[in-house]
Image 1: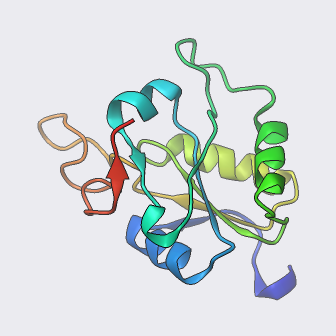
Image 2: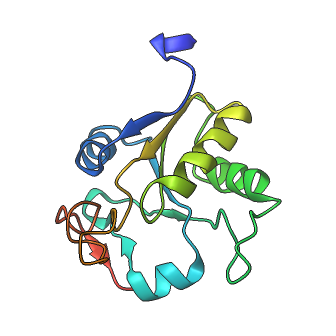
Length: 147
């Protein structure tokens, strides 16, 4: 691949994601959770680095079907921000599953630098079945706002 990139989706921690977003003004964060999650759980806040998160559902709520037009809608949103197929794009969901699928779909669509934020916004469940207690964007103390 060009620029020394290897095929496939790289898993990246939330802290590495933040560092890479800070250092690369062209990098993009895409939150693929549902509208309900954005409203009730919160969203990453990139205002400190003068950016906005791209909010686009991978699955629709409440039926949890994969959005058939996801790739097309995201391509349009990325193009509106001046992103190219070589732009580094970070995909975020609750805990890293949906974001990986979305990143793989965009890789298949020709985007060469798709990254999965492996810990997600809330991270995995802890022993008490709660999120945001052991890993994730919120747990790591990164900026976020309530939707």
